[in-house]
Image 1 (cartoon, helix red, strand yellow):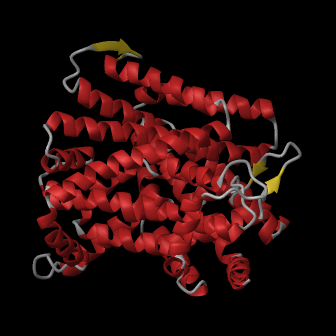
Image 2 (cartoon, helix red, strand yellow; image 1 turned 120 degrees about the horizontal axis):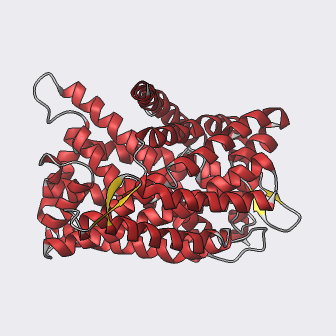
Length: 472
C-alpha cells in the first residue's frame, strides 16, 4: 500500500514540476518583461547601486533592505546550487546550464514584481512588526473575495517549511555531507530507532539542532543578523573556490561555453537526436533554475516585506538581485566547473559530481577540496533551514492570526523536525514537500499577473522620482 501511495506522489511531483509549471512561470516572466520593457536588463546597474549603497530609509520596516535580501538568499542559496546543478547537467547535458540562464533572465523580473507587491501591500501590526507576502497582496491587492486563494498559498507555505524543504531534506543533506567526509565507511556506529547510524551523523545532527534553536527562537531580527554574516561569507568561500578552478583551467573556458551553447540546442547529439536532446536540456535546466532561485514561487516576497524602505520599487530592484546572485553567478560557476573538468560525464551522480569537479579543478589535495565543498554544503543547508522557518512561520501567522504562544510552539515543532531529520528515511515526506513547493507558485503567479498594472505604476512612480531628483 505504501509503495502505491509513494508511486502516486512521485507522479504528482513529476507532473507539477514538469511542463505545466515551467510554461506557467516562463510565460509570466515573459509577460512582465514585455510590460516593464526589459527592466531586469535596463535597470540592473541601478539595482546593483541600490544593493551596494544599503542606505537607511525613513520608511516602515524591521530590517535593512540588505538584511531582507540576505534572509531571502539564505533560503534560496542551498544544496540546489551545488547538487541541483550537477543533477541537471548529468541528466540534460551541459546545455541545461544555458536554459538555467534563460529561466533566471525571465525569473529576475518576476522576483522584482512579487517583492514590489509584497512591500506595497504589507501590513504593519500594532506592535510595529510587519507581515507581508503573497497572502497579503492577494487579499489586499486583488480584494477580500480572493482571501481563499491567499489561504491556499499560506497552507502550502507551512507545509513546505515544516515537512521537508526547510527541515528534513536540509539537515539530512548536512549530516550526510559530514558523514561522507569524516566517516565514509561508517566505522563508528550506534544503534538508534532500530537502525545503525554513524556517530558523525548523530553528533552533527545534535550540534546543528542547537545552532538552529539558538537562532530561530530569537525571531526575524536574529535570523536576518545571522544571515547578513553567513550568506556573504559562504557565498565568498564558494565563489573563491570556483574562481580558483576557473583560473587554473582558463584555457578550457571558451570550449566549455561552446559546448554549453551547442548542447542547449542539441547540436552535439547524434544524428536524429537533436530535438530530443534539446528538449531534455531545456526541461532539466529550466526546472532546476526555477527550483534554485524560487522566482515566482512566492517565498522571497515574505522576507522582502520586512525591509525598511519607502519605495516598493526600490526594494523590488534590490530583491531581484537574489536571482542574479543565486543562478547567474553561483549556479553558473558550479556549472562551468563541472563542464570544464568533465565531471558530468564520468558516471557519477549528485554531490559526487561536484566533489569530483573540485578535486580535479583545485590545485589542492583531494581531501582539502572535499572539505571545502563539505563546508559550503553545511553552510548553504543551514541558512536554508533558517530562511524557511521564517517563511513558514509567517504563513502560519496569516492563517491563525497573531497568537504568540502558538507561533512560539511552532518554532519548537520546527526545531524538533530538524532534530529528527537525520533519521528520517520516508521519501514520501520529501515528495509531499516538493509538491507543496510547486503548488505555492500557482496562487502567487495568478496574483502577480492580476496586479501587473500596479507593478507598472509603482515602477514608473519610482523612476520618475529619481529623474526629478537628478534634475533638481
